[in-house]
Image (cartoon, one colour):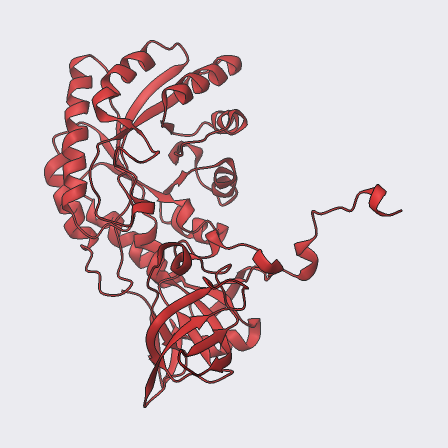
Length: 418
């Protein structure tokens, strides 16, 4: 459930009119509901109350420091995949002992930074990475806490770009080779084995793949125990989907029940890395209609574009289009497109939508995850602001970029000044 509702014909975020926010901050902008963020986090956390667990919110879904702080204040740790995300998490107040570092391409400087901050553990993705972490820890004279991310070769039944637990994916190591690698890790002097990690994909709408993956990883944990290798943490990643259109993903309680049934006998603390399921429907992108074009194909041109929200272009994904001011009467079938000079610049294609007119405000729903974090300055477009509503008050948690921001880090060399 989210707190974006029409009241008296105008879309509100909690008790605040979206129209009034647009008047004050301009368009386009991202808008998040604090109440929804907290509600979704608590629903997920509460679902696992009968299982020893740690929630590590997946920063890649939405890494604004105010959003991170919201979850940290609720008791969350953070799952990061870069030195920059680690910096954000620490700046937002995360306890390093609740930070998990995932990702296939950790640089030595990032590994050193994470070790200096004493994070909970690295999820190791390759044989070479295992030895690099050991080497960096050796130069620092410390032990590096690690888990191996195993690839159980489970079809998650999601978009191929976000399927991460199949053999063809770049992520993780073959589960059938994991025991061998754990033996290798146990013999490296500057590594401490803390857990096993597994993440099979994103936007999953069925429980079956999660349970099947847990069964395969559970077998590995039992084998490790037989060899005297203790596993403190079972990291099952994230991936639980949300409703964008007609999907019917399981409720976190249903997901938790299945995981608890299969995993309760394991003497581990479970780590979960939810992202989209918490923030996806807690945010929208607000944009304004600039022009309409009617003909053999109809277009609604808005001031938001693929550089602001790339999911429709990248994944062909569906984002619901809602008029901020409720419209009655006829609809039209049109593409909603932005100002970018690319034919792939669209927010919706061949979609039935209200008969919009220039000046109308539009809400692109379910944009809280993989929205702003994937935005860019393509076509030299300043990135948009992010706004958070709580208790009837809106807060700008990221300022709109200016034209000056676009060139702030650029320099004209002296030879071009001649």
